[in-house]
Length: 442
Image (cartoon, rainbow, N blue to C red):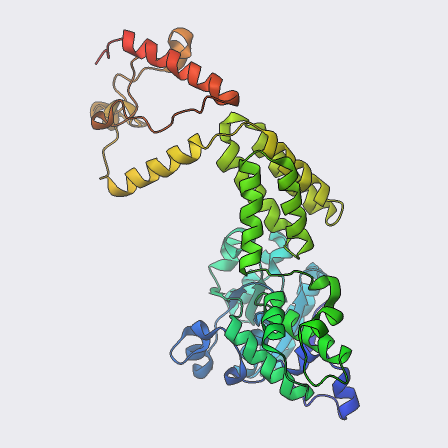
């Protein structure tokens, strides 16, 4: 549904009504100078600051994690250009809602007013829905602002991207979150936070201002008679949400490291334990799933190619089922990876090739491997003498060269003598023996 919102109204008329408004909304900045964070965009001379001060703000995509000020910046944009602010949520809206927003913008234009159309979670709109904005953005009927937590390169149509500037927003730093706590403390007239509780609350929020303020508001409400808000008060207020949560801290990364090394070390019990510790400590299961996929590629590789497919399947199962049901698929994946044969041969070879190519010159492609789609290219010798492997005995052109001449015989990939790579190594040995018996015909 398209809704037109009032920008930065005066708020509730009395203190009781004001107290009922969530703290995050009460602290929403009304001016650029009140914004905490995003100084790479908002500091003097930076892109958005310059646009705001000029009063001419182009259509844009605001890309960043939750709770970093995407909606706030959109509201400030509307205020900077003295425009009406029309909001669409891509989670709930359809093409009809987009049409309604367009009609609102047309009505505003007839009245001599500008319009900003803000689309939250724009990546959730399909191609047809995103395309519906194009002619109106192109004509200047309204300024389009899309907010997304997903990479717009993959989730936003290229046509829409070409008409909008992409600004990347960052999670709030620890210092910025601490400043936000100070601001909230003054608004709530709350007792001070102990240093340990402050640091733990910041770790819990993980750069998300909304999460930080919601947690702080709960903490203050749960401790009406406290003279100091300490770690124990934080535990009581947030309970399971906070227990051993240390995302971004040493404990979090140590647990990830322990999980990865347990899988690499073929200990399924330890792998299950560290996975459970991560999830119990508040780690995002999707992050754990990504790490599990990485383990399959890095530490199992071609010793058991099924491992990578199973890891990807586990990630998909979690996306479909969520927690806690989907966690079982992640557990199955780490057990399989732990007991699978191990090989980092492809990982090692890939890193070695990348390092070599980075330091080496741009060697020309051998002429017999070059593409020859035109007669001129054929006349120049492109593709001359190339041997089509399928026409050769056993489907292998023995003695054929595929590397630049100066790199003939160079080897980067050495299969591990385990799992399927044992058989891969045997096959490569057979092919190289055939090469040794065959002289290069050129």
